[in-house]
Length: 282
Ligand code: FPP
Image (tube, rainbow, N blue to C red; front, top):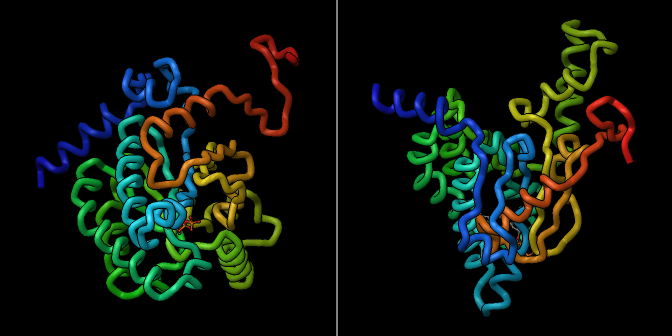
């Protein structure tokens, strides 16, 4: 117990300080880009990913869709590790939407099994790495074994101070906003707050993502260019990158390529760009 705590402490003190990221030659070659370093100030604090294309990846290989989700889980493992290695503050992954229940019984069941397997096999390593797990979505609507696994994972990692890993399960963006509005309405009704007290900050406190900053970068694989009800509030000022490859083929090198593209973007948040003297620059 003592050593576990010490290791987490050391992890958060040293490992989590964002470092300049260098891309290995092999990685750089695989994305046909020169090796480059990214300064921590150009890194997104919060990355959200829509892991799309598992089904198409499997179809193209004559495999069942469940094989695509299994391959997608491997990609997810690597991207979580990379986010931790590179000092990303928060990573949100869209794993199962409220609309996904409409898929075939076999596919839903395969996804639920993968989920359970993932939490059972990864929780020790994630906790050891000081990862803080939050489930975005209605946990009570999950089958009991999955509900128990994710509730335990959240409880076990609640005091961890490393990567904020948000996994959207049984999640819908509009439902999240409606839930927040209902909670605030309850507080008004009980006299805890006045309607005019409601502002962005108070509203955000009612969202599943209340512990994470706004999304800076949203990545969607498979070439689709939609938000699909994922984090509509949190992505208001996010940069979007659509990678044409299917999720099982997404890897560290592709991820780095996205981070590099993000670092080159000029974010204005609705304002204008100013130079060091405060002058408006072109
Ligand atoms: C979208 O691809 C992907 C999903 C609906 C599921 C994503 C889930 C995983 C990657 C693994 C399970 C998650 C965890 C946390 C272990 P699609 O099936 O819609 O692909 P398609 O558009 O090509 O059909």
